[in-house]
Length: 283
Length: 332
Image 1 (cartoon, each protein chain N blue to C red):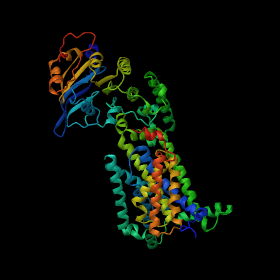
Image 2 (cartoon, rainbow over the protein chains, first blue to last red):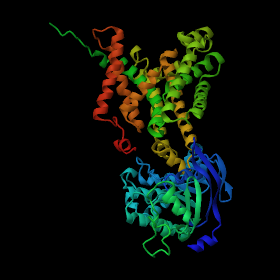
Image 3 (tube, one colour):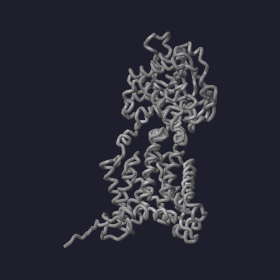
Image 4 (cartoon, rainbow over the protein chains, first blue to last red):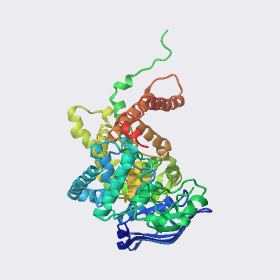
């Protein structure tokens, strides 16, 4: 874990980003970077601005100030589709499976460089369209196989279970050929065995294909055991960052969870190995 | 004593009646193909289709009668003009939430109608375009009637379909060939990767955005194609009526389009054809029923019957005649 941290150069850089909704400063000067090839967790009490920050990074909200660079290029204020085309893709807290479309169509849709998605080239380059369609069809089936969704390929996506939809969303995001994937609460509302499978996929993609992951998560066991780095937000700012061990012993993090928001939610250390100090386990 | 209501259904055996129904069903079938693309496949609620039909009809007529553009070129130009206006209307309004977009489009179509009514020098106002044609002594439909006569003389007469009651049969044939080809073309488009993006936008715009699709661009393309279909329906309406005026483009016709859409079913182009035939049979049939009612009341009654048909449909077959129930139920 520490190895990845030492070697990776930043792929995403967020500098002093601000966004207020009326008087509420949802994101108030957040600054951090994410190293290439890392699995980085973004945590914080409810209302810390994690999802808002996700929406800003991926172009769904326009920030009022700051700078965001991805892969050495500014993506500040760019629309979502342009950011996805640069190789950064996201999933949503509440899954957005396209319910009335078959699973396979969900997958095919996400593939880039299909000339058939442009009316002019659809009509003039029919061979290229067919050929690309075949390519992405094969690639989609391959991904569905790795995610154990192959048997569901022709079912409407709405018939999948909640956990299967999360898997489909990740598989579909991978169809865009991303270098970085942002996951908003991937473990929420899915059964533990599917959750484990999702984590295995993340770790495999990181090690085999060098995909960078940034994910928001409330399940502290997942955060502490499966991330290389943890970024902690509270009240729209980044208050701490470091390895899971470092963050757990940071007094500011303890205060944010116990004091600031009045939340009862407390980050718990992993059951094994026993934590070196009981820093954030107070209560 | 005989029944107080002596209803005669004799009209149902008359060629003229069915040709009339067929022509309207075909024209509004083309009109509704556009609505189907917008509402059934892209999820944008376009209430301005009658406005696009008006622009198509008026611009073709004005180009021929007042500018002197050749007939075929005018038809092509009228479609391009309508598409351009569709894009100009869509650019600001498609950024709005769906319900506000619907309001913006109905306002647009009423603005077009107001212009048609008041810019008398350009459109002939309430007298209709016939007054322009008489002033200029140029008749928009002349080239069409040459085609129509040719079809009658060379194809229909030899098989015995001649005479006054078959006068409009050439138009029926041409409209339905156009409708068939356009429906086929739209079906192929919607099955293409391009259509897949549209359906994804209908399901969830944000998901489509997150997967790298420029949603506004696709919505504009959908609206531009639908306005082109409206314009083509506008030509045929002008061929059929020979003179158009603003009251042919009341919002009522857009709503009838929606009735056809619901009758035939969402997300099916074949359903549009069937829905259109059903609706126009009911609407035109009532015109010929000999009811002991004043003409006004009978005209109003037609629309009540359409309403009853729609309510029954919602109760017993909510997906329409051809709609896919799965796509409706699984939508959210």
